[in-house]
Image (cartoon, rainbow, N blue to C red; front, side, top):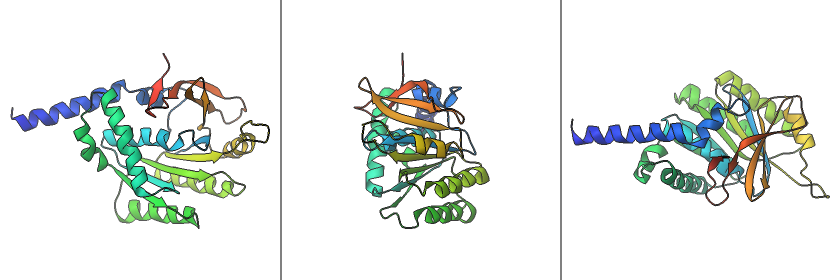
Length: 242
């Protein structure tokens, strides 16, 4: 067997091993977690908790499996999003026996589209998705919509992306920024009740015991389920609790 063939096979084995061992695979297969296809999957957190990095973990996971990812970002430049992917990939590579040289290969499997100004951005995203999939022949296996601020106008946005996920048969992972009340508690009630009209795949991220913990809400409950996963603050990698 030629050296080049051995190298390709080694890279493939490394990727398969990483996909079997990484916590994100356990998350996707967990009975109370996952990113169901044809569904809108929502992640709520306040500013600075790590919503973007959390989403990038999933983007990288799909890209490592040679599946196309379409990543929309609101308020960040394309360079910043690529920086997130690169930094988290390097930490992921160290933790999962991947070579950092695989970055260029991984990079080919995600497309980043950014919007600095929020004017009519959801209609723009809808048109972009339709153009890329129906006209350009792109076949994304995951769509990420990151950086959205929850507001009283969010209902139409959630309905739009619920319909896109169902129509395109693709999971959509959307992060939504929420805020604190005057007493310091998270203002989750209104966003949660609105989200429950459109999906049962609802996550909340927050700091607890020096970790970024992840909770899951059911469609009919205000009490979250504590998932056995967390995000490590210094690497922003998804981890499984021991």
